[in-house]
Length: 379
Image (cartoon, rainbow, N blue to C red; front, side, top):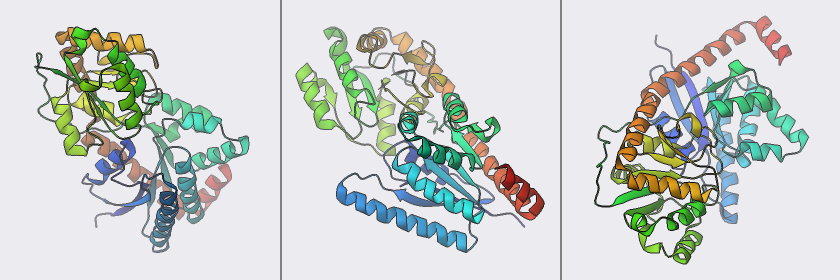
């Protein structure tokens, strides 16, 4: 009889506008033999005071739903997607419930500002978070740099922290026109200071007029739209910028298919889905060496790296890709090749093997009381 392992995936809504929701959706849409994966939403991405009350209701319903599955023995493994701040609180409560009933859980760390959040906490809270992380079956980090951070900061054993780069869907038709009528530079993500959006506008305004007039700048996303529009007007570049808002997957793919360069001059990142998606469409990326980005973007090979906040470097990088079509195309081709191993097929194979290993290990421990007691004492 074929096994049917039951995995509960817990995180933000699958419609959440960001990388975490995208990763969850890709996993949920992947066919998997031997597993039944159910998703429970703990957060729906609103921020008003009324919405915050609703968020408590959303989390309460999520927690009760999980307790229902646990009481019916409908859980073999819990996969928790975490970031920072409230996410740690919500997932911490769920992780404690898993510990109480003896169910293994995975922590999947997406938080690009976790280090800043953690360092600002009182020592006691830090110890509680560290203890929680140590009770996980494993922690998934988005890059080697984040893996090293969690090992050192939370005192995790190296074999317990694995790197699983975010996955991408690889389009078949991705090659770019070397001489388009007008170049399209695109930004995808939260429109705010952390993403470097104000630096981007200033750098764009500093381009030589003949270069700037060859480019249409598309800023796709939600966030500080009004402030960004005001700055564009102050800089006199408002007519060259469009704000299509947050795009669904089909709209995003259509935009990337029509674009020539991706821009993301962030100050903090994990491993941005926006960069990986752009690379899958053969776009050269101008970005910053933060988080896991240097592990996929090598300066001059698969993209261009500039220091966070360095507007002159950002201007020069944009100008080089405007004036040099062959560089633009070669970086884009290399970028596409770089992310091909990050296909959803490879990603799901690794993830489902991890599920299987953890579930079987837990069953072995549960079946051997002496081994279970020994492991408990070690923890």
